[in-house]
Image 1 (cartoon, rainbow, N blue to C red):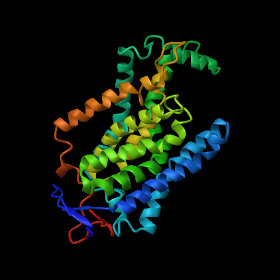
Image 2: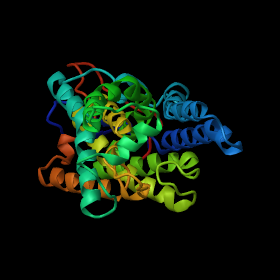
Image 3: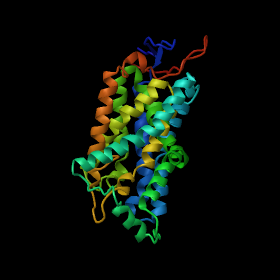
Length: 332
């Protein structure tokens, strides 16, 4: 029996939550994973110049977008209303969408700063907030002349620039991922329930990083432990990114949040003491302290009723008389 929509009362006047079939979901996941490994092959064949490695990582970020094209164009999932299904358009209600974009842009920055403080409090990293000796040593090694200039001036300048870097170029690259993870996959899974949609998307997102994680990226581990850590981080981050997506019916807040997260990826190194090499698994934004911060935020949002099903329909309201997106060949 096929079922293209599922009734789900909402506050926004749209009672239909589109359902994509498991076949389309499986194709999306397989294509995204396969393309990620294909793009990363040069990294596995031997050392590459840093700029080439960075270009490969950015190219890999667009593989979920290519998977979206496959399921949308070849499998017609959804059958119509693709922009609304993906959360790209319309931006309705505008005020809520804009406000959540602001939350997405600044939230990861604030949470990362809290994670850095927590990592220092737990003794995972030695911070030097007075002299920023670690960062000063990095600047001197790079040939920078700090005569008469406090490292704090440089750090504060960089922090001020983070929101701008979160948009350009980071949000542009992040769009390639988010249109797949939160745009298509979370939307496709939404009719199975809010939490299954958020958790499954997070697990898939984490596993998708395996081609890079197994080479030591993010955690400095080249075995399955690094992949499991990435899955844990992506599940927690994915719950919050998915909340932004489903709460607004728009993918754009998640795009900005992802861009902001990438923009502060090396923030811990601004505050470490000279001569220290912290374990990447124990620092923000992807390590254990950040997991704790994210978990606390999620619990607070749950307690505030922010994960109620009627608040997280995931799709912007249709105009009166205009049908919402549906997906063919879907099965319960």
